[in-house]
Image (cartoon, rainbow, N blue to C red; front, side):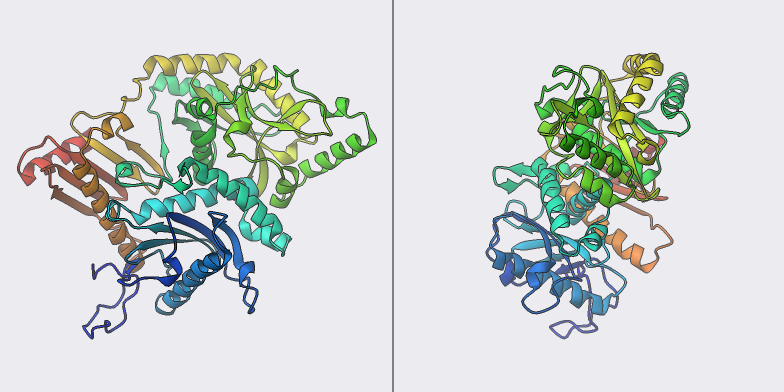
Length: 533
């Protein structure tokens, strides 16, 4: 479509007038030689500040999936991406290139950090050409980078600390590969399609509770905050896969919630398939009492000194073998705490490790302590600078939690369970919907079991409409970043279902109604009734 262009020159290639300005997509009706041999999907991360000298082009590549892709093809793909980025900056210096579409491929761009780009290349086939939505694909890039930065710090910081980039490449390879394992089907990636049009990556789904339960939750968070005497600990409480409470800033809450949904909640742990328990293997082992050799003592000193390092680099050095997204390494112990199975030759037995996070806003490392009771998951965040003895200090915090918060935890879990309506708690009869607030980064949607009852035609139409709205929002943001533009669109799909999109005051509603009336008035009234709920 002629309207879908990232940049538009005063005259088109055919000589026709083109309006100034543009959207975030360029449609290229030609083949791209660099992508001609691509089969499936690729994800690459590269640094435009590196490899500027002839013969050093390989130095700019920080990550490429699949890893067995020929080097020349990797360079060709990244060379094309770099050329597109440079060219679009001529016309739009302040706005990043987001998507380029060719006949056979779709390139989705995301500038994760200044001059550090992530690009997802997706092959188009007849069955899915109309099902790709670049907003959903870009969400994968944003999510993977946010999670990486939470555990390892900014990529640029790693590159500055070690200019050879060996450190950054190693962490990116293990982390992003583990992240992509959730999308892997055989040797290919199964990326979001039209069937995911009623989901929203990068948002938190919250649990609505009564005033009585809210008071119990508040009492619990107060106890959790005092687990370390003179330092206030932050916490997140989840029930099932829903957020109950948080004391963290918005961005940190989103990243930690995302990680919990991926790997830490009861449903995530059950899919890990790991029944290992460090208590069953002899309980928690204090490193100071088990290191009997000089080498072991030296290792403990190195460990403790790194624990006091509050830089992201110190975090990386301490956990150079820890892979937080590796499913089989995470498990729940008999004491209820979730930890990583980590074995080393310098320590007898297996010692559980607690993930360490890097919170950009606080510019400080934080220990993550995870406790689980039935369907309740508690994420306790402890400043690393407040723990002199590292994991030994974490053991003290755990004892304090078990001694002082156990009754509060049991009470909250019981009351939440009694009031829980199951997976269909937020189902609205007759509607299949997703309601989101991008500013607050929260969403609520129809349960998956209800969404799958929609026909393919309804989902395709909904996905296509969301794609068009994504483009309109991008255009509006560039023309006037300070004001949100309101939209309301109702369309009739091939199967006579009503597909509706409404954006008002920054909130977004997308829905499908298959068993509806024939008139537009019916669709408009249905939206109004839903909004009143």
